[in-house]
Amino acid sequence: MRSECGKGHALEALTIVGLGILLGPGVPEPGVPNFPRPNPTNSLEQVQYVEAQAAAAAKAARDLKKAAEQKWQPQLQQQQCQKSGPVEGRFTSKDPLVSDLANEIESAYPGHVKGVNVPVKDPVTGKLLTDIDIELQNANIQVKTGNGNGMGPQVTKSIQANGKPTIGYGPDLGRGVQNDVANRSGLVTTNKDVLIKVVKPNPPK
Image 1: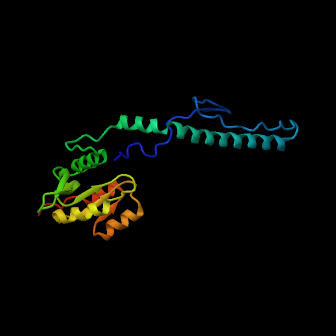
Image 2: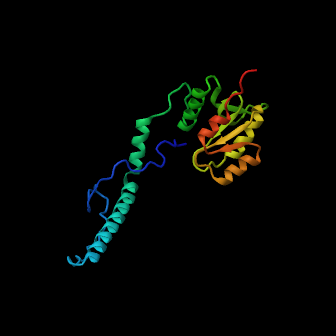
Image 3: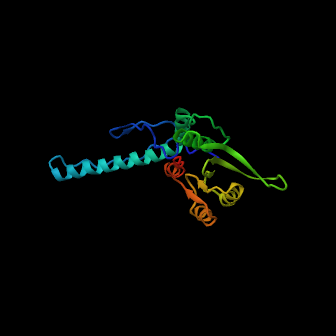
C-alpha cells in the first residue's frame, strides 16, 4: 500500500517574468499570440490590446503549469515525503499508512493501540484468515489505499475475531466499498481526523 503522503501537492515554484517563461527541458513552451499593435492614438484599441495580451499570458501560464505538473509532480511528491518522513513512534508496519495512523492514535491516546498487523486465525485449523491492521482497546481498524477493494470481507472477519467494532479507513475509498463495509455492520471513513476522534477511549469510571 502506498502512503498518502504528498498527495495533491501543487508545484512549489513556477516562475513567470512578464511574457517570458522560464522552462525546464522537456516542457513545451505555450504559445502566446502576437496581436497586431494598436493605433497609438486610439485609447480603446490600446486597452483591448493590453487585455488581450494579459488574457493570453494567463492562459499560457496555466498551460505551462499543467505541463510542468505532469512532468515534475512525482518528484515533488517524493521530495515532500522525504522531507516530512514517517510519523515517529513505537509501531512499525510494511504499510506506512498503517504505522503512521497507529502512531498518531497512540500519540493522541497513549496506551490505546494494542498492536498492528495482528493475525486472525481459524480457531479450529489455525489457518490465517486475515490480519487486523490496527487493534485498539475499543475497536479494530482495517486500512486500505486506493479504492479499497477487498475491505468488506476483512471487516467481517475482524468483527468475528474479537467482537470489537471495526472501522474501515482509507483516504480514497470508493463509494461501493464504503457501502459494502456499512452493510457488514462496520464503520467506514475517508477522514483521518474524524477516525481519531471516533476511537477516543471512554474515560475510566
